Structure formats: structure tokens, C-alpha cells
Length: 412
Image 1 (tube, rainbow, N blue to C red):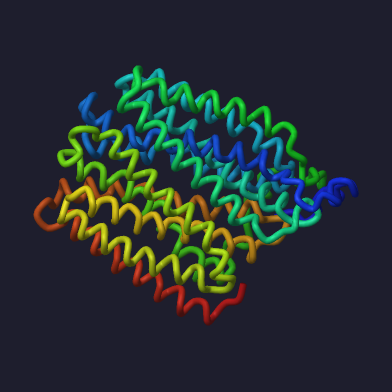
Image 2 (cartoon, one colour):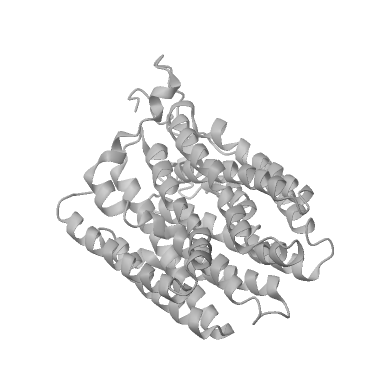
């Protein structure tokens, strides 16, 4: 990464005197709005599968489609914001989220158009996660704020948007008129309002004029550090692997049991998953630093996958809700633990870049529902959902072993 960038000069004495200026809130609201747009599609998977006749594999691929927008936006937008500043890269994010919602609203029963809308939503979310998260972290540190809450605020902004977006979309699609358009229209309004707030957020990153080509900044040296490879990388795919299992796989398995209101039940599983994740992120400050948050996350994921295997056998409303809560706890802790490690490892010139790498790996977890659907269709007798969830629990145990051994060979 480049080395001539710098944090902008300190804000005025009047800003510092307030001690809690909450300048981060505008960026958090924009991140919330973008996350809303990113996850509003999830509870509607049941609707698209039932009304439009899409197969389970098709809707799971549509869920995964926005990763094709997220990953490039993360890997390009994050490092570029380290060079050009946070505002130029973050300001388009809520507008792109609005475009994504508009395309989805107009998509009808076309899988291709819906896929395009998901890609726009993914681009917006990638920018919000890498650039917005770094901006929130900087605005949560001295002299803007007291410091120490940046990772938690960024994680909670995303989780709140994911949860409320899914909940609102599910309720509107189940009981309100125009089920394929109204929920998206709400996000468009929220995203445009967030854009107006974001304009006033203070810039924290000075533009770099070193003369180096911009593409030279896309390399993130910290991503090759041993601590990242042995501690962060093993937990990253579980972030959204757990979440997607809870609010994409479980609703599909429970369609017949929740036949009275399948979309609303899907939304409920989303809200439970992300609500528990949000609560865990809020309470996790008591764990302190070091390796404890990562170990706790993987232990929660081991338990969550095992409970999901039980729920896939029982197929009751109660078991699905318990599994969603358990997976949500693992999701919330894994996201927060990963971000905390990233903020310890990264220097000021590659914070957004390394955050982008973490989120890029974490979003590979959204391939889990499509992979499980494909495997269950190809080998239906051998690879049932309970068996695959059980294998997931063992895989999480393997990752915990890697982290425990790797932590001895690396330091933050």
C-alpha cells in the first residue's frame, strides 16, 4: 500500500470539546440503509419459489448473486478509499442501493433481471462494508470520539440493517399490497434519506497525491501476515455461512410447516438470527480483547451447526427458531471478532483494504445454501441436510483447532 496518505488534520477545538460529537452516526445510518437493501431480498426467496416457480437452487443462486457485486466493490473500493478519502467512495453506496431496489422492484419473474438488481445491491454493500466500516472506525476514535467502539458500531450498523430490512420486507410481502414492489420502494426512500445525511459527515482521510497509479494500491500486504492467515481467515467464511444457513436454508426446509404465512415466517427467522447477532455484538465488549472473541465465535458456530442439524430432523417451528438464534449468535460474534482482529492488524494506510479482504472471504459463506441445495439434489440419500449441518459442525471444530494452534505462532 502507499505510505504518504494521512489522516486529516484534527477537528476544531469546539468539536473535541463535546467529547461525543457522534459524527459517526451519519455514516452508520448510510451503512444501515445499504444493509437493509442487501438483505431485503432474503425473506422473499419463499415468495419467488412459490409464486414464480423458481427452483430451490435458482433462488439460492439469486441470493448468492450479489456477491458478484460485493467482492469487486470491497477489493477495489476499500483500498481506493485509503488513497482518495472515505466520502468519494462511500457517497455512491446508498444511491446504488436505491438503484438495486428499483431493478428488483421492476424485475417481475425474470431471474436475469433479479440477478442484475442483486449485483447492484452487492456493489452498494461492498462499499458500505469496507469504506463505511473504516469511516465509522475513524470517526469513533480520537479526536472525533473517545475511541474503542469502532468495530462494534460498524458491525451493529450492518446487523441492524440486515435484520430490519428483512423483517420489513417479509411483513410487507406477506400482508401488504404489491408484495413484489412495496418492500423495495421503502428501501429506496430510506437510502435516499441516508444519502442526504451522509453529505454532512466529516472526511477523515486526506487525499494522497504521491503520483503512483491507483491500481498499485489494490495490493494489501497485511493480508499475508501470519495472524490474518491463521486467526482471521478460519473464522471469516462462517460469518455469512451461519447467517445464510439460518435465513435461507431453514425457511426452505420449513415451507410446508409454515404454510399459513411462509414469507412472514422466513422474515421471522431472519429477524431472530440477526437480532441475536446484534445483541451478541452489543454484549461482546465484556469479553475483552485477545483471542477470546474468535474462540467464542467458533464455539458458538460449532453449537449452532449442531442445533441446525437437529432442527433439520425435527422440522418444528420451535426447533427452527432455536437453530436460527444459535446460528445468529455465531454470526454476530464471528463478524465482530474478525473486525476487531482486522483493526489490530491493519495500519492506517491499509485499514479499508484489509477490511475488504475479510469481508470478501466472509461473503463466500453465501454460497452455502446453493451448495447444500445442489448436493442434496445430486446425492439425496447420503447428503441430507442434517448430515451436511453435522459436517459443518465438525468443520467449525477444525477451524477452532487451526486458530488455537495458529495463535501460538502469531501476535496481533
